[in-house]
Image (cartoon, rainbow, N blue to C red):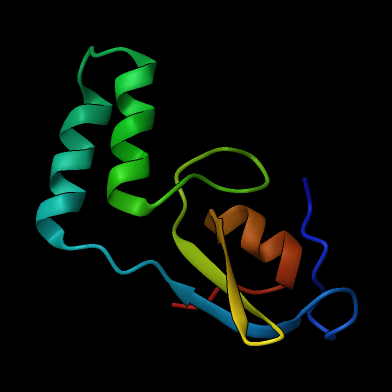
Length: 94
């Protein structure tokens, strides 16, 4: 599902920008171990949510970028993988 927000500030909110997800090396290593293991998909999904906050809003894969929007003083956060952030915003921030 695509966002109702746009980069031009049309729709419901004002686009604030895209930045990489900030996760510790320890958390990322722990996530990698779980994803490489034979645990259930449910456990993998819960680990992704705990470490990265959620999954890519477009395709459901592991997110690497966060897009922020301002809506009358409230901030909306959407997570994207590199591929989907490129499609959505035409670039990937590093």
